[in-house]
Length: 206
Image (cartoon, rainbow, N blue to C red):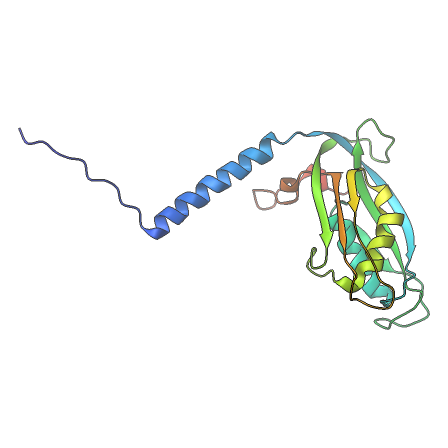
């Protein structure tokens, strides 16, 4: 009787790459599913932000865009709004007293007083704010990040806040944006439903 020796399965580069991607995706999904979650409730905030800086001058609509970026990066609900405030200069024109009106929701532990009593999943997410992170943030936004931390970040539920931001007035050289913290927010996967058309209860307007 003839012995039959099994032929080893050979994977090309494409096959190996596909296998690695599948393993990594599976590991990431497993890690996300096992991350500790706890119930949270949405709290509504309204704030009129007036920027006072020495190095950068914003238009009111430009200031609103930057603040929306910081709100989202810090864990605010995806429907956060930042609108140009009442400014003397017109649309797109720099204003030394630029102002923006913010309306946004942050997640707080379910036992906190909140405007929305319906509990949703919450978890601690790491946040790092630096030049080019988020991408549209630059060194010239250093003073804005400082004022955001002082005036707005307290409306979020945070822990382990580390601020090493240094802003040198009237110049970019020597200025550094370095703000890190953990924010209690909706799990990242809730913002990207697996099925098209699916709505995440953690990011739905109340």
